[in-house]
Length: 457
Image 1 (cartoon, helix red, strand yellow):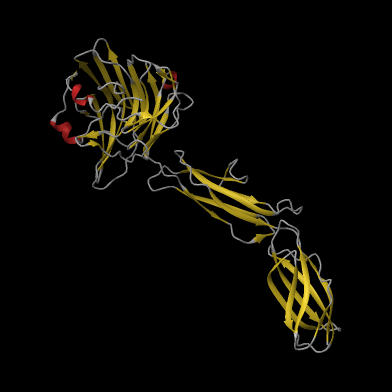
Image 2 (tube, one colour; image 1 turned 180 degrees about the vertical axis):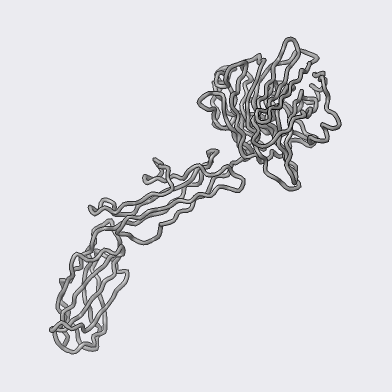
């Protein structure tokens, strides 16, 4: 665990002699905030254990004010450089928010930071600045226009014994800046970092601006990619165990690129084409995903047909209804969506009911009835499982010459069990024929009808 460095603020106040101090104009154009050494860092719950005094390559930590990558075990550190794309911050209300994006040396396990970068802040309107800082002195605003989407490269280089060169290049506009700064004592050179930060004010850490996503690339420490070091991957949280404020991605395949995002809300997914009915034809489901306001957008939707073991990307899936009945039964379809920063939506479930087997009615029981009294016609509907559990049964009673005498339609009759059709007989005395037909809940017609006799006395 790295110690909290809040107490080092005043102790380090006399460390630097800056070549240029903030001017009145600079203070007016940049809010009264400053970046700060790493505050409240600790290993995250998923972090790997240390071996001796040296952490294993790749440790995950959380911090109250930093998100990004740093190394504090492989020093001394003499150079740090990175390229980033200035993100657009969202407009907020009366509450001031700020986010700084920078490269620097020191600040983790030391009370000083030599850094250069940009920021985006909001309080009713948004603003963007470039700056450098020799903490604990306040930042100096750089006379360079910064816009969302600008591609910037920052670098901090130490030159023995106690001088630094801090530079910033705006690739989009062509503007560049470089300054030399001198320290009064030899620097610690204890860490190197590429950071998105929630800056501090006189009352503490300010809320981090909702900047969506910032992409860092070409990150090099002492001329080598971050992956060559015992790096710390840092997520920003408002406090130990609290919800994240910004999340850092894993390093890219080049070992020198990553992203930081404040978009922590997963997308939601709706499905069309599902219902509670049984079907004897293929069913197609369509998935529609919606990202949160201000989110980075939906990357893809996906579904699983095996209970969530494997997932297939796609905005639709068709559940077949093959004639060999191989698709019959209840199909559970899980679905979700993932946004462009990797937030995975909640796994949701719908069911598709397929039945292609035809029912078979059975009427092996002859019936007798007495006029004016309750009478029973017994029948049975056979329908192999899995399949629809009910059927609509139609019973027609006909005279000996074939004319229809009575008709019953029974809905939602359970299959595969003996059933009774009970009625008060009003038919004239004589011998009749009753015929049973059944259509199951999926709409499959019967394989045949079943018939027997009814004698009315």
